[in-house]
Image 1: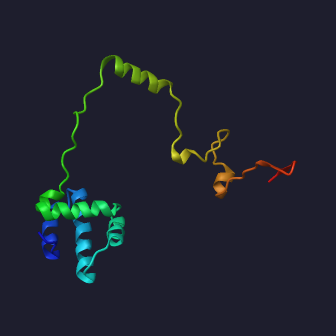
Image 2: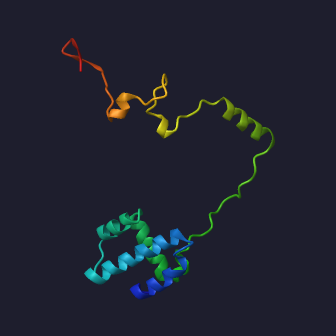
Image 3: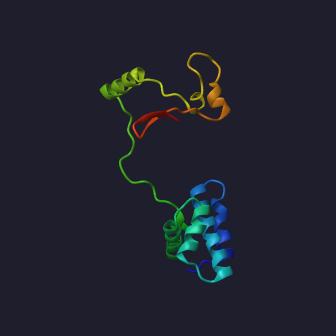
Amino acid sequence: MNLKLDVLRKEVKPFRKNFPRVLRRFLALIELTKFRQKYGRVRELDYEQIAARFESSGRTLYRWEAAYRSGGADALIPDKACGREATVIRGHTARKIREMRKHRPRVPKRKDLGKCPESSGTNPVMQAGHVELRHSTQLQGARRTV
C-alpha cells in the first residue's frame, strides 16, 4: 500500500478528536508523504527531521510508515499494553504505605523553591534572576576567593 496524501487525509478524520496518539502518527505520515512528493527521495536525515517535529525518532517514523503500508490505518492504532492488570493495595502493605507517607519530609513544589524560609516573601536573590555563588580555589599555594 503506497502512501497517498488524499487517502491519508480521509483516513485520519475518524481519529481527530478522541485519539491523539493515532492522530500524531497520521500527521507525521502526511508530512512524510508531502516531503516525498516534493523531493522524491527521503533520506535518513529527512526521517529524523520530520520525526523531530512530532517529538519522535526517525526510526519510529519509519516503523509507522511500515505498519501503515502493511496493515493500513488499523496498524497505526497502538495495542493494549501487555502485563498484569492493576490491583488494589490492601491490608498490611496499604498501612505501611500510609505510614511512610506520614513520616516522609514534604518535597517543596517548584513554585516554592524561591521562597525564604524566614519570611513569607520571596528571596531577593532568586527574584533578581541570579544566584550569588562563592567558592574558594587553591591557586599556586595561595588561597583566593572568587
